[in-house]
Length: 125
Image (cartoon, rainbow, N blue to C red; front, top):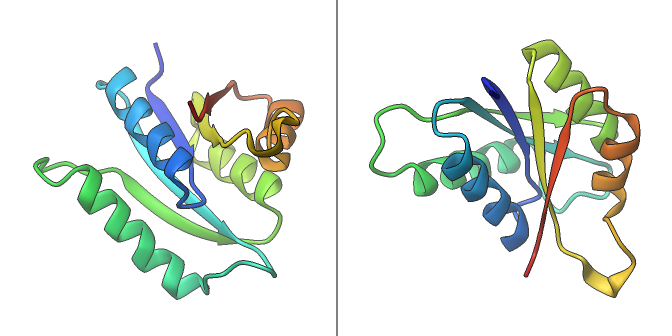
């Protein structure tokens, strides 16, 4: 059903779980991983790109074909939606840590509210 799946990551354990779930749930889909660097990010764009490469290589260590990945800068909700539209994604996947018990995280909630593309949220157990 889904041919192109964009997975947003902040490098948290929950985000890694969302990536692994996307890989397992949509084995025939083309996957792409995005991280958005903001003004208060702990990573520079270069550091984030290295982290993405490490994440992808460790998740797909035995596979010859690995997903594409990108780093964007700015507002995470806007950047993820813009990337999904430009890449013509059928689905956006994002992890939700559930910290504080207040529902979705701000980025996940923003995506659910603003995206015309379906968003699958993956809650940390």
